[in-house]
Structure formats: C-alpha cells, structure tokens
Length: 134
Ligand code: MN
Image (cartoon, rainbow, N blue to C red; front, side, top):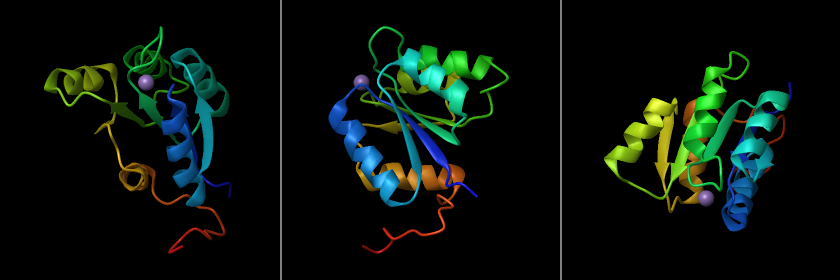
C-alpha cells in the first residue's frame, strides 16, 4: 500500500519546508501547492488523504479553496485542516462554515502539525518508518 498523501497548501516557503520535512520524515507523501488555485487543482488530480490549508493565501484564500473542494463530490470527503495566524473565534467559525474539518493556529510547532495529521488520518502507512525515534 502506498503511504498516505498530505497536500500542503501554503504560500510561505519556510512553513512549507518545515511541515513538508517533518511529514516526510514520518513516511507521508507530501504534495505542495503555493496558491489556493494550485491547491484545488492538485487535490482534484491527486486525491490526497488530507489537506493542510493555509487560510491566508494570495487571491483565492484558504476559505474559498476549501469551499470549492467541499462543494465538489470528487473532493468533498478529503479532510481539510485549516492553518491560520488568527486565533479569533470569528475565523474559527468561518473555517467551519467553509467546510474545514479541523483548525490549527500559527505559529504551529511541527510536532503539533504531525500530531493533528496522525489524529485525523492515522500513521503514514509507510512500510519503513525510519524517522521514528530518531
Ligand atoms: Mn499564508
């Protein structure tokens, strides 16, 4: 079985690198998108097991991208974890309304991202998880 795939939609290069590195170390496949548009099309093409969706993105933001994905039968079942710099209750509600399944507030420690991914979809399923304990 192929390891589970996580689609990371994030315009900040440092965050992309950090989250991608820690997820790959635990055996997940990581797909990366820099814009909401790119995220939506990659999700349709590749059907990842989970999407980590930055909310603050240029042009199409994470709310809009989430709404599009949740409105399409093809992608509606993919869990989406919103990642945002705002801890405001209003943002949390907007994320929920857009269809996000969970919500993380930045700055997020890499191990918290990992813990949330594992909580949502379980371990990577990779045959060898050499990163464990190291
Ligand atoms: Mn951003």
